[in-house]
Amino acid sequence: MKPEQTGHAVKILLVDDDPAEHMLLMRTLEKVDGPPIDLVYVGDIGSAVDCVKKGGIDVVFLDNRLVPNNDFRETAPQLRQAGYIGPIGIISSDISGSYFQQFQEFGVDFRIGKDEIDRTAISFIISEYTSDQLSDNCAEDFS
Image (cartoon, rainbow, N blue to C red):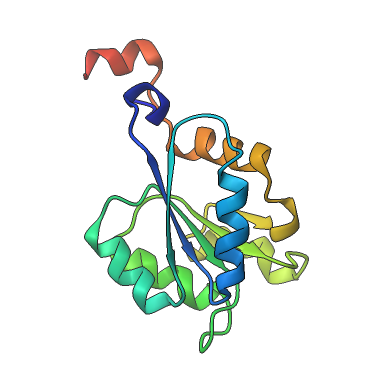
């Protein structure tokens, strides 16, 4: 069932060592059409692992570079090893590096430049990555 059908908030975990990014994303999320959004913010991968272990996270936005790790190739697998099976999106100021082409090999579902994050992109991500993969007719059979 889609979040907009159930009325439940979509819970997004933002993992970024720059608190300013939290404020920027909060402002962007206020403008997004669709289901309500609950933004959870943590500043390091250890806190993110603890958060996903508790459950309830629908989408993770993971900053590419978190100190002391090098980049998402070290951090995203930690979320998967913690048992998180939902979508992980890498956010970065610059996604042009060649290693970004291998993002799926590290358990990442999508990548997006921080300058591309707007209400349309967030709406698409929520629609694409939080909706049931069953058709509406079939999903009703399991309700």
